[in-house]
Amino acid sequence: MPPGNGFRLAARSRRALLMLETILHHVSRIPVLRRRPESKRGSFREEQRKKDRYKKASEEIERELKAHDISPDKLRRLSFRGKTLAFTGEFRFGRRLECEAATRELGGGTTPGGHVTRAVDFLVIGSGGNPNYRWGDYGNKTELAARLRHDYGRPKIVLENLWRNELARRGVQ
Image (cartoon, rainbow, N blue to C red; front, top):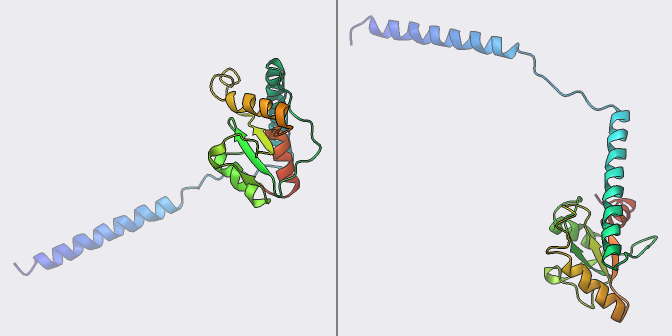
């Protein structure tokens, strides 16, 4: 290697480092766009809209159930401790496993595989999903629960909004 090559290589490296420092300096000066935090008023409105959507979905499900001669139970409160719950439908709360975990957190149990049997105390019907699809495949649990309720007095059939309200009242989200 000739004696001058090492100096040229070092000079190129210094130039490259200088260019890199310049680029980083300019990049660091680019303003970062941040979302403004929602005002309390905006979040209140959004919460109110969600409540209205849940209420509308629950009313729609209630109408469908009545059309199939099934009426959901009107309960003031829902107890969890020592009770067995089954879930059917799509839930706005989350996936079915999340619903079951929230129920177990409050002392309730769930049936293996989510089946409706005489041992079930409450069948919770989700308020999500397409209303036209509701009786295609998952009206079966609801119909079975209605027959069991007629023959044995349980399970109680409740809508997701009652279940969610009870979770919120007890501090589970």
